[in-house]
Image (tube, rainbow, N blue to C red; front, side, top):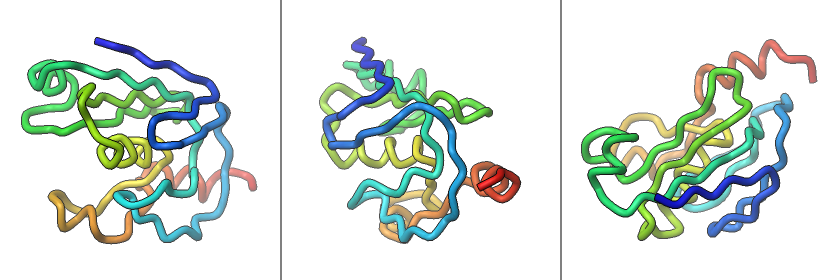
Length: 129
């Protein structure tokens, strides 16, 4: 297993993040499979690259291609992907770390505009600007 931890990281997909959670209005048209979305939250991100499907499924569940696990306070996010994962899979999970989610499951859901996670949206509504 390879762990890549960064406070300020330029990752394979060209995503750059700064630590520290900040609130901002949600005005983006996030297309999570095609582009980096606006950062709604900016957690410290750790990318864990695993070699086997079994190792990935141990973290993400059966059949998963990857996953992102965000702490309840939005301070950290851990991305789990296979070492062989392409840029699209990494971008997908990084957008989850930025506070975005697709509606539904499957490839069709991923093609639709993404929306903020409900918990992130509530936090943004209750946070000072």
